[in-house]
Image 1 (cartoon, one colour):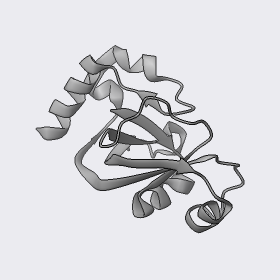
Image 2: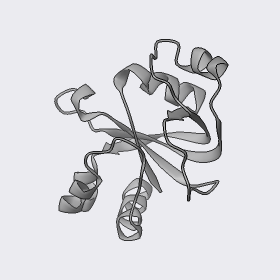
Image 3: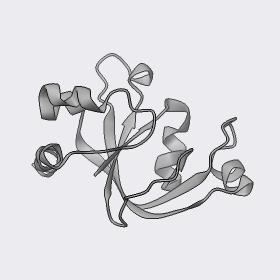
Length: 131
């Protein structure tokens, strides 16, 4: 399980296109891995939860200029990798990491690039999502 942060400006495109852009090449990710899509805290409304969607990793490829223009036309970033996903799911009960794993959530801050979720936290998150 991985934690992906995204801004309000790109969230709709990430969800609708099932794509995410990265600067750094992921090394140990596996096809089928669950991605928690977390909206940046500063972009959330007062009582809005950050994690509202999950997806499943399908592939990681070198980014092209064409893909950037197609999926993120408003972006000025120079992304290097394109993450393609499937099985997008809007969560019935959105959450913040702190709601589910308590003080352990602080180890995932700040998240400037995707972070691997520790196994013990992943179990709690899966239980929460599936309840």
